[in-house]
Amino acid sequence: MAVSDTGTRATAPPEVSPWPALWALVVGFFMILIDMTIVSIATPAIQSDFGASVDDVVWVTSAYLLAYAVPLLITGRLGDRFGPRRMYLVGLTIFTLASLWCGLTSSIEMLVAARAVQGLGASLMTPQTMAVITRTFPPHKRGQAMSLWGATAGVATLVGPILGGVLVDGLGWEWIFFINVPIGVVAFVLAMRLVPALPTSVRRFDLLGVVLSGAGMFLLVFGIQEGQSYDWAAGVWALIASGLVVLGAFVFWQARNRAEPLMSLSLFRDRNFSLANIAITAVGFAVTAMAFPITFYSQGVMGLSPTRAALLLIPMAVLSGVLAPFVGRLTDRAHPRWIAGFGMASWVVALVWLAAVMKPGTAVWVLLLPIALLGVGNAFVWGPVATTANRNLPPEQAGAGAGVYNTTRQVGAVLGSAGIAVLMESRIAAELGGGGASPAGETISDIPPALHEGFSAAMAQALLLPAGVLVVGLVAVLTFTVSLRTDRGQ
Image (spheres, rainbow, N blue to C red):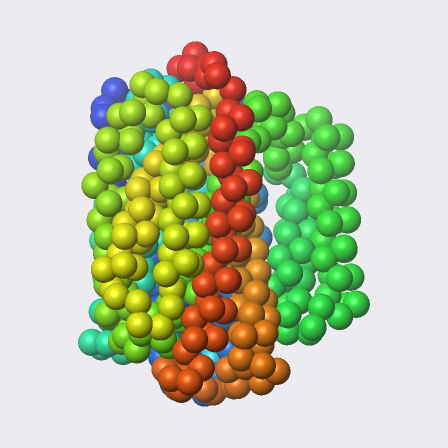
């Protein structure tokens, strides 16, 4: 028997507009996604303040992404079991308190620990936003709703560096975390008042699936992130291999479990769901990876302050936000293959274009043109891909589907963070010589002018990595099926 997440007998939700609930959830969702990229612009300031090495300071981002990604399969199912509103509020509380902890830390190690707790709170929140959309919006309106969700994700990842630059220059890097506290309180009140208590349907919880998925994801992602720190030694590859083996056991168990599997493999029988997960993995990779070369180039070579470096991204954020409503309406009318395909192609062209002009002495307006095209690409990707992934999911699998989708996105982000760090370090060494990589404690702003040419080349070459990964996403969206069913979940 289904019950609501308040513990009472399930009844049909009242016939009210689902938009207020979605807007309430978007406030918290926007906040947690900003924290994926806001730290990138503050990285030099954090590094200088704590005297940390490049590897240590990258972990401020990687710890958040790791703790965000690993539990997503579990937290998505928790929303089905205990109700999306309840799990969202729990996650929001954890995230807000951890943000306060981040701002009060006095060492890089404590900051990394606090960021991990932040990531756990974000992991509890994220799947619930998509699940509420799937369960409260009719199929013919989900395109607009998912486009708002996607636009929030896209704009947040772009606004993060801008807001971060303003806060770092004006108040100090601690305020990129302190600002979350009042926003978190407002988001909590809005969610309590506006988000409905939806019925729950899971009767059992797959404890073995929880253990296998959590352990497998942790071993795999941790091994990839730490690979460069240990020079890809045998132990690192053992961690990665162990993670793959455990995840293989998890999939085997999900196929054998006839009761209530943590992740129903039937989700992947929907071709578009599978392809959308490939596409969003590429997007997660690119969003995280491209931030580091752009930030290091603008501050290290152009000599811009964090705020001025962040302002370079304004055209990207503005265009992404302005185009999102248009893309949402278009998604409910046109096939997402062409909408998302145009967005992916624009994104690839923009990154290659930007890499070509990232040189010492390049005029700002020359950089702004490909950056503006990045905004166009973002606007046309997030919403259509999310809509395609969830269009055919039945309500009882909304949380599980959202968990899978967000897991693949976050795994892509973690891989992007790890991959770009490895490539940047190798290209700096290649372009500047054996000792080219910045030593521990040396900030990006300390790079002497004589090294600007080589450093620019290294950052430009690193930017081609996310461009290449996005080509995989482009192939995935171009192979979406022509006919999309819209009768399920009504």
